[in-house]
Amino acid sequence: MAKQITPHVSWVGKVDWELTRFHGDEYSTHRGSSYNSYLVRDGGKTVLIDTVWQPYDREFVSRLKQEIDLREIDYIVMNHNEVDHSGALPELMREIPDTPIYCTKKGEAIIRGHYHQDWNFVNVKTGDTLPLGEHSLTFVEMTMLHWPDSMLSYYDGDGIVFSNDAFGQHFATESLYNDKVCEAELMYEAEKYYANILNLYSPLVSKKIQQILAMQLPIAMICPSHGVIWKDNPAQIVEKYAAWADAYQENQVTIVYDTMWQSTRKMAEAIAEGIRETAPDTKVKILNITHDDKNDVITEIWRSKAVLVGSPTINNGHSFAIAGLLEMASGLKFKQKKAAAFGSYGWGGGSVKQITAKLGEAGFELVNDGIAKLWVPDEQNLDDCREYGREFAKAL
Ligand code: FEO
Image 1 (cartoon, rainbow, N blue to C red):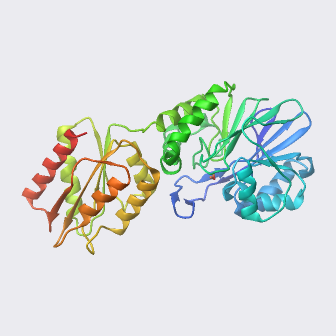
Image 2 (tube, helix red, strand yellow):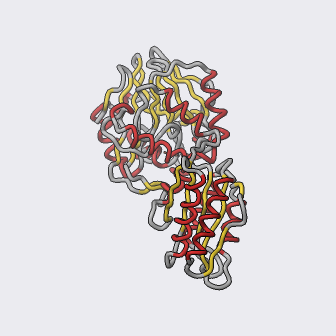
Image 3 (cartoon, protein in one colour):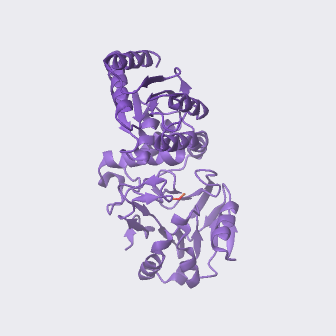
């Protein structure tokens, strides 16, 4: 079970190849995930860093026992206490109830709120250290990255950052390290993770990266709580985060729509033609929100400099799926992205006006009032959409 990472550190987590949904149904995990837990053995002292999700609690404790006599664990460090990391604590603490749990003050409150146990908590804050036999752990609070309790731990023995959710990816692998997996798959999952989970906190990400860089810690590896360990050039993911936190965008326009009888789809494709004619170097992606995965759509929006959102009018408003997407986009607080709406209607209309209003409320910079077409668009209507696409591209 355990995988030796350095002379002092072993991985003792759980790879979850079966996981398809995370955060309830909020996040799709097409490539599974892992819940990474680590054992640090240093000069006679042993620290367990984070645990795993509750469904794997017995397996985790049982395998941990094969690796170590649990009574030899001197300290437990909980960098973050969402259930995917703290879920095995009750099972573990039944075995070693007096072992001190190092976490932030918020972390203690969250553990108490979840498990209602009076364990031996030790609160730590930025700069606090836990001396081990020869080296030590230093704690850095990562407040709201992405929960109030989040922190990272730095082990100066081997230059390892235990970053918990930060720099993670929902990516199952038996290979453990970033240079042992498909780079394209890995980076897509890292981007999707940032876009869907961390983008909201981008201003905090920028400040925290500056703070950590100012500490000038020698970093040999970054060990997150999900996915691979960044062993080959670990600075690369820090540099990526710095770029992603700075209103990230590529030369891309994403057109996302819902359609009932194909009219709004035809509009989407005609608008795309217009954009391509005016801006041939711009990547244009057309996605149907009911066919494409919502989190993949959000990732494409995050990559884009502009989005067009379309829905037919239904019940005087817009579709259920587009409403869900707009709610997600609103919460993630994308910055410096332009947008507009489009859609077909049969009599009263209303979808374009509603989507435009919601895009504005979500922080998108509105390019115009959108375009609506009655019934099934004829060739003149489609020409109008092409022209609309040309004008939209000129405004970017
Ligand atoms: Fe991986 Fe916020 O838990």
